[in-house]
Length: 377
Ligand SMILES: [Mg+2]
Image (cartoon, rainbow, N blue to C red; front, side):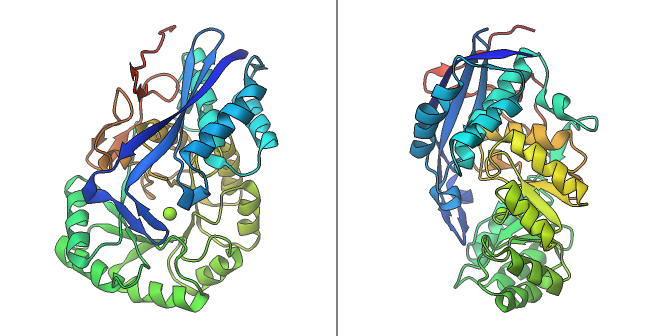
């Protein structure tokens, strides 16, 4: 399917979080999202859309830096060119810039959306190695709040049907033992508990002691206990605790993945287009992880429904995502006051319905109003 890119444009969108669910973690406070929206129009006047969930405290990018690199570096090298596959676009943006994974992801996912729309297909169908599943369980992240607020947020998610609760932990002076204990007492043994210190434990011994103190509350997974750039430390902690490790901040690139595999630092790879530089690179990293016997789970940087639609398409069709056993981060719709798309992702009994439309299946809302897509199918 040969496509000529006519025009690439980038705009900045603000998405306020519901005050109740502001994420407070070891790396800061996520109160308001300021993301970049990329639109790629083909010479056939079909448009694909991609989101870059930019936050400086996560990847060092802002919406402004992403918009600049898309407009001034990527667009001039992609416009008026022909492409047969999204992998070709991914290769070019990777040659043009190091880092900037969320800016690259916005362009790469927009082209995947365009490429699939041009074929009147869903992306999940185009990449699947299994029959794409229709709905995916989501977990919910609970920021670091006092005991009473932690119980209140956990209860709200539980009552919304969420069965996996991911506690942000490791932010002094909050007492994580008391927080998790209180939620267990309130909700009983049924909720699945996971923790995510976001790299906040600064040494092996600190990490092991903190995790051991929380073991009585039945942790299913521990996510990124050690600093992002200390992969060997992550491997060492993994050998000392009885709970599987999810690697998140430590693995942005394929090189990070190989280094983590070399020292067997993790059990499950947290992967999603923004952090890992695009949908194309996710497919590559998921395939590699699978080859080494590792499972994958969707992480997120609070993508809106636009970014989450791409993530849902990724996990729906790939065997490497055992979504019933390991729930991913697909519940952003609970955190935002409004949806970013005209057909919001539906949350029902703790599960997100994978969009059914062509491309990634959603259409963004912009300040100009709803973008109605040309229906060519
Ligand atoms: Mg994480």
